[in-house]
Image (cartoon, rainbow, N blue to C red; front, top):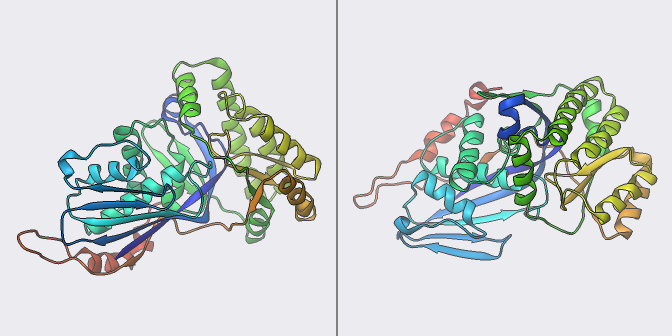
Length: 365
């Protein structure tokens, strides 16, 4: 058995500037943090060539009897795309489960892609750097599935931690955000996540934003430019420990984010957000592309019970969390590979365990 887990993320600023259509021309900057809500992959080998994908989130099972006839599409297109990317023909059961619903704005698609890439790489006895995990996952999503996604989700999931990520045309730079332990503890305590009760398909929103960036539409480019500046300010106030300023910047970022595409907000989201501000929250936004999912707020501890009571009366549910600093991990790796018949399978697990001992030295920043 092999078990892998990968965290989802919350984005504090700069979301949208990580789309290639924008950062390839103007450069992007995102501040984000991985949190301890995970996507899991459990893989067991079979004695035949059948590949079975079982998803608890979508309550779906799909079987692939012949790799040569593997087709993409449907709810499980992402795991099938990873299988296609790695040319996996060996029989196995792949069980997928998440601690959060899909389509909630916490970067679950990127986390799924990173987790599956990490899992299949481990099956092949290969150890990828965190950068390689992120880039390979991004290629699966964009080149095989043609999804209009940015790059922050894959990097946040692969690296873990609280980072500011710089997106340039030819390179991505991931820099851990150095904040004091006190600031980190207060930040973790004062960020609140509320599930709105609705999920959304972000594709339409991202497609519109992508097209606007490619076409250099002034309102969208101007909003993204402002959001990038605010992301830089977010980095600075966090390093200074100025969490009052952090909450205020979140609010200003949300005002610009709403200009990027139709459907990012709606009357219910706006009502709940205004209600939270009235009860003491300093700022916030809808996580991810928008349209539903989680409402993220920054609120000092003394006002949190009031905010929770008001939003729960509107049908929202709070989700507690902590930051994750590990990123994508193989958490169980039994040495089950062996030679069978004329098929040679790598005994890669034990070798990978040896390599994992060296991970601190191998990790790149």
